[in-house]
Amino acid sequence: MSEKTFLLIVSLCFLVISLGVKSTETIETPRKIVSGTWYEIKSTTMNEIRPYAVHLPPSYLENKDRYYPVLYVLDGYDTRMRGVGGLIESLSYYDLGQQIPEFIVVAIPNTNRTRDLIPTKNDLVFNGEVLDKLADNSGGADVFAKFICEELFPKIETDFRATKQRGILGMSFGGLFAAHVLLKHTDMFSHYLIADATFVWDDNYLNRTISKFKKGLLDKKIGVFIGLANNDHLGELGITNRKWGNDFVVALQAIKNDELVVTSRYFPEEQHGTVMFLAFYYGLIDLFKNSEK
Image 1 (cartoon, rainbow, N blue to C red):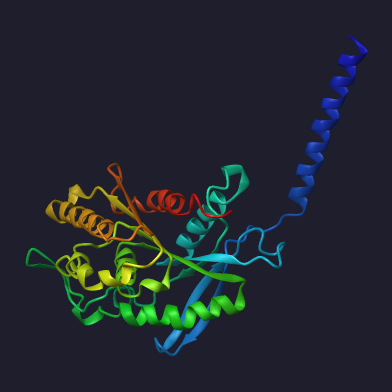
Image 2 (image 1 turned 90 degrees about the vertical axis):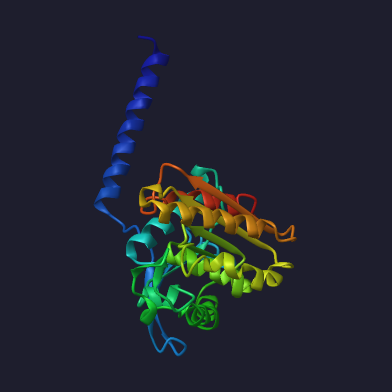
């Protein structure tokens, strides 16, 4: 055995030993992987205590002078907070190509989901059949939007280094709420990620009312991504929901504003219950791929 080969083997052995020691030290001194922190705010608008969770980007504590855009996640219970926060952190991390910027993530869980996310007071009706009796517990979306805009936004921007750039992620009724906010409270967010929204709500509510609010979208710089699932297994209900979702995309794209960028994606292999993370993944990349890292 040559001296050069011997030295190479010895060096490799020391490398393996050193890696083993480092691994052992890590095990002996474990550290937590923190997904986020829960807070509460007393809302005068909602007349209740509202919880919310905040996920900070990895560089937040290191870069004391840096301010970050914020993504607000609807239906923000623990599991969704961990999943979406981890997805956003991963996509902004260098080993996945830093495909999107880093964000502060704010998750808003429900206290009364149908009341807060549905824009009109009605039952869930399709083709004259009542699918769910919601008329007594719906129609509070504008009040919920006011809480987010007038109370939660200032709280986040006071307590954290947050910029005024805000995005919203919503699925199902959450997608309906996000689309309603896009039309009626356009200035609240700069980016809207809508996953398989309930387009069949209130006899095609979103498409019926878009012309009423179209003027507010003529001069805004906004990005919109709409993901649609394959719900053909639900029969005419599922087929109609996708059709009206496509109609909504077409109506938004027809608005004469080059800075209103609307894209969509159909996921033929996914149903309503499985499409969310794929829609969020592709939507985040689509909305923020050209943003400053």
